[in-house]
Amino acid sequence: MRIRLMIAIVALLLVSALAVAQDESMEVSDATCSPILEQVWTTASDACVAGPTGYICNGGRAPLVQPDGPVRSALSSIGALVEAQEVDLLQTAPLSLESSNGGVAWLRLSDPLALTGLLVGHVAVMDVSPPDFPPWQSMVVVTGSSAPVCGIAPHNVFIAQTPIDQSTNFVVNGVSIILNGTLMVETQDSATLFLTLSGSARVLSKGQEQQMPLGEQVTVAYNSGDYFTPIGPPSVPELMDTSLIQNVPVALLDVPVLLPQPGYVSTRGLVNVRAEPSVSGALLGQVPAGEVLSVLGRNPSGDWYHVRLNTGETGWMFADLLVQNVGDIQAVYEATPQMPQRYGLMGQLARVIAPAGINVRRAPDVSFALAYNLTAGAEVTLLARSPYSPWVKIQSEAGIGWAALITLDTEAIINALPIDYDVPPPPVPTQVPGSFGNAFPDPRGGG
Image (cartoon, rainbow, N blue to C red; front, top):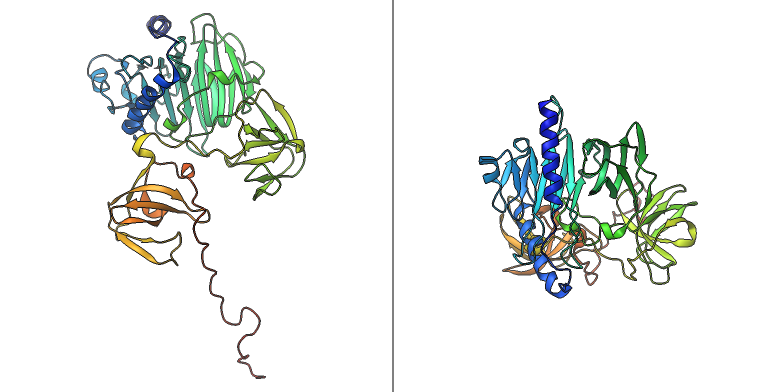
């Protein structure tokens, strides 16, 4: 009875607190809003993107925390860390243009959960895990109902993400979830919406399971304001409302993703995947019949789709070769977009980790001439990546050159760096004598 009473009280506090409207005007121009949001995201990124697992990291305005007292005080400053198991309730503040800040926090859970929750804006999460279960195995999530503070600001959202190719089971608002990828949660007055942003997810409520295809959303119903107990099974998946995910700062995720468009496509037979929306584009691979693919965008004429494969790789497919179940695709482009890069200096800097230092070359291969040397610990700026090898173009006090990626430590997204196509190709390997047609006498005789 005591536990139920506590849950009821906290639930009432969550709903009432998050229902308060913000004193922000929707008349704020994007030009005014953009640098403010950029500063909020950059500050949060610098403070928490590289944070450790097993901890909550505060990336913005001081959050409301339970238990009150030392734990709450410990999380009040930007970059503060507190063990996740020490916190029962975390509520982040609304985004504010007047004070140029807002709530951004990471809830990084360690094994056996291996899950990271990102709170953006006015969001509350509460640990309601039963005894003998890992902390945060079951949680209640409530997102604020206030409208975005400007046209390019995101909704208040909670995003759960697993490490690459790792599946995790957990519970949100009484709904069991099996996730291998990225899932967004947003609450409404009497519903919780689940949207898969990458990978795969399944949700289970009232004994019924629903697969969640990329580009679609599933809704679970509740009594108004009570997000502890669902009153029905998951809905049939429907096309994603892209306004819900618009402007989400995906570069704050541990694994940034390109946001999907509504719907999906599937292959009729073996279909080529190309680097550009053209039959002359480089062939990246082939996808067999029956594969379901996320749609990231289309070219202006609509005859090619930019898709994400089940492996996470992206490429272009000819639309007429696909079974199409798509909505209004608003991401239209001719050139393939790059992955989102980290905010601020985190997307540019790297540090030499090779104990003996590194040889910086004039082009991306060990066969090219030496440009200069760098010692262990030296900081460099990332400029570009190689089109044919795991090397990056760097700049240091000694100049510009190329370094093997394995010798550097960085939080930057390498796939988001521009490709430098103006580099010489790697030299052709010297062939072993005799391997190309008896250019030398046969040692067994016969002259």
